Image (cartoon, rainbow, N blue to C red):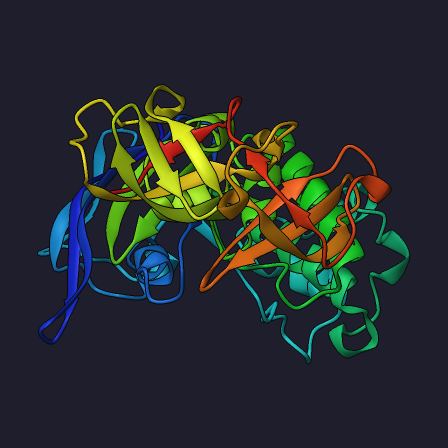
Amino acid sequence: MSIQLNSVSHHFGQHRVLADISLSLQDGEILCILGPSGSGKSTLLRIIAGLEPMQSGDITLDTALMANSAHSPPPEQRPIGLVFQDHALFPHLTVAQNVAFGLGRLAAAQRDQIVGQLLERVGLAALAQRYPHTLSGGQQQRIALIRALAPRPRVMLLDEPFASVDTPLRRQLRQDARQELKQAGTTTIMVTHDPEEAMAMADRILALVEGETVQFDRPEALWRQPAHRFVAETIAGLQTLRGRVAGDYIATAFGKLATDRVRGAAALTNGQAVTLGVRGSSVSIAEEVTAPAARAAVEDIRFDGMHWTALVKHEDQQLRFVLDHESQVQTGGLVALSFTDADAILYS
């Protein structure tokens, strides 16, 4: 076992930021912390780093105490590496000097060998004598990562490290970063607001909402079995619908769902108002329509890179569903939807 958090809580004044966060990671495991703004994810990272004093709980590393409320050493006294969004490279040092910064205790020849190997590994050996301001954002981020890896920290902390670069480069950087971290065998905790990034980088994802853990599991589990509305909408791509229980069905503005298609619906009572999450790819156009009121107007048709999707609206509710082909419906036309094969989950 590598790092373990036990009942970590934190307040800013009267405002609770984190509530009893507990988790344990294995050696070399990559954890992504995902949550909306204000969920406490960056505060949790700062506590682990030693940038924020611990108020409650403790952190152990290889079963030895690293920090608690009575013992909270600063970052330089913890076996951790830090990489932030702004790279934080030293502008007055060359690339090679930046990478070598944490290797001061080694002999010069050994230090130069490690720096050369790391720069070669990320394809930047030719830039060794350049200064940070002459590099692109992607190059600076690679340097920041290998500088943090150079001292071989037990734990790497990444705070939205790719947020400041363009999308195509961001995808390449996170692929490269995952390979580097896995090759180094470094346990990693990364904060991100991007669900695609969390799915691409993480072995496990910690989803935080208002300072509480709402799900902690593998990316596939969060996608297939979301345990909270935030996870369902952000990771699993479910769409929110309101409805009311009517016998063995839930009546919505777009049609009826059988309750046996809705996870968590076993204890519903007739007439109860509910909120659901529905996967749009599991909704289809109904072949037969018995009630004209079940028809909804198509507001828009878009191509999302994989499918053609149609958007229907009813008052303040909307639903996007996958089309078999672009010409299946027309903008402005009326359609009735089928939830026979719906993949849905009950929120409340």
